[in-house]
Amino acid sequence: MHNLKTDSDFSFKKENRIKSKNAFQIVYKTGRSVVDSMSVMYVLANDIKIGFAVGKKMGNAVVRNRVKRLMREVFRHRRSELKDSIHIIWVARKKLIAADIYTYDRIFMRLAKRAGILK
Image (cartoon, rainbow, N blue to C red):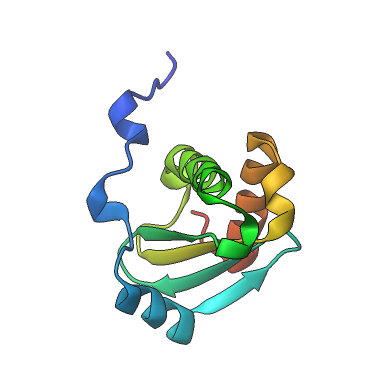
């Protein structure tokens, strides 16, 4: 029998988000980073939370929001494969604008593997 996942398995609740500037700064300063040509991932041991950073140089609000939406979508689907005790900040770079969802997924998994946060 297949182990089917429900919609609630893929939810992205407010308690899973890093929102405050102070929380971002803590992860930036004390966490370690993994770099790729299209994005950077900062990782800090803590409970599982993620924040997304898309700078204004990436484009207008429509472009930045699309990038964040795709990043969130990848995280929602891959969260179950990550360790439970991490804070992640995923920072987009300009090359990511033109990428499709499969590229986002590939980049996220590559960075997660290099950061050692996969189960």
